[in-house]
Image (cartoon, rainbow, N blue to C red):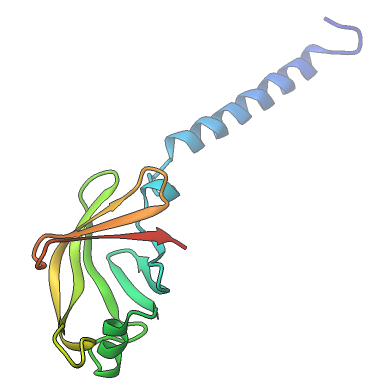
Length: 153
């Protein structure tokens, strides 16, 4: 052996290296797939300031934003901060979920096009981008079928 380096020290060093390797491999093996890019959990928003906070199988409204229909829906009691916007979220693939989204019906005729007349729960597909930065919702039951893209906040 090297001068001043005993067999006892060599075994200690080997044991330490083996211990670190076991910890490293354990961390890799325990990846639960909840990394940012494959998780729907978080805060998602639209450019008008509307924000939805998703946790588990539910997304709740955390900011109404400035869209007049949404503000009218709030004034009429159809929606509120803390109320559900997404529900029954179930993972269907690495980056996809199925569930329901709250949609708005509103009067588009004169003189008041911002009158919210109803809200309806519709089946929806939710897809998170591979980089985890956007969430696209697709609502085939809306007329017309609707795609909306939210950005992670």
